[in-house]
Image (cartoon, rainbow, N blue to C red; front, side, top):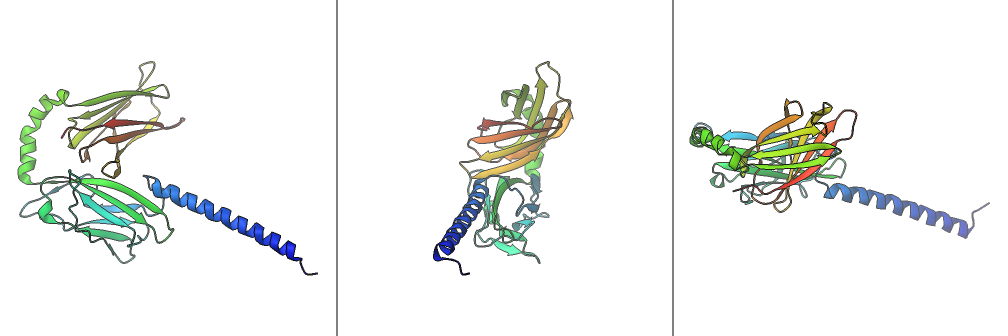
Amino acid sequence: MPQSYNSLSSNATALEILLVLVLGTSLLFYGTNQNTNYAYGHANPVSYSPSANSVVTSGQDKPLPDDVTILFSERPEPKVSYIHVTNSKNERVDNNDFKIIGQNDRGASVTLDKNKIPDGVYSVSWLVLSLDDGHISKGSYVFRVQSPQEQQSQQIGASTQQANISNNSFVEQANVDDVNVTFKVTPFYVGENSFNVTFTEKSGEFPSNINNVILAFTNPQAGLGPIVATLNKTGEGKFAAQGSYLSQIGNWEIKVTAQRSGGYDLNHTFEVSPIT
């Protein structure tokens, strides 16, 4: 027996409601991923050139790289995706010529204006819309350009910097889940720094269940981040890293994440403004 008009209308209305709910959920998920600082799956970087936190030595026998290239796990959409390269003053030094490269269309690159690349720290910010799953991911990393003369000058001045290191440090503490977190940055300038994190319990003992410690650097004003660094264990409850992660002036948010076995992660964000 044929269905009545009311029955058909009711079924159509239910279907429309279902479609709206599905679409709304999809848009919400997409919007969340659009605004997040981390890349959860999707088009993740597989390799960088120049590599992350590397020192590129410039000279007659070692010319500067022609471009910045990133290989992703999925294919970037060229009309939406980008790679920006900026100096420590947040000035663009790339030629704004983003293109897709590689046999599988998973690589992307921009060429560099070599006239704008003296010794210094450079930030690479990328955003990718994946052609494979339609999601957006973003992130940043840094590399340093250093001439042999600059490298020699730094080595000569290392002892002087070490003597003054106590006068140029950022030190702050926070209590997270009954664990004291001490965060120290030296010499606390834009550029190369040492980052040290120490964890102590109320008893004064060092916690033994911390497996990994990660720093995520974000500079909202400059549109940088997260720039991620994994620290090395240097002793009981002590972790450290070296690098040019504070690549520009301004206010930085540094999130410390300590991954623990048998417990939740410890998370705390420190706000810092390095000296120029």
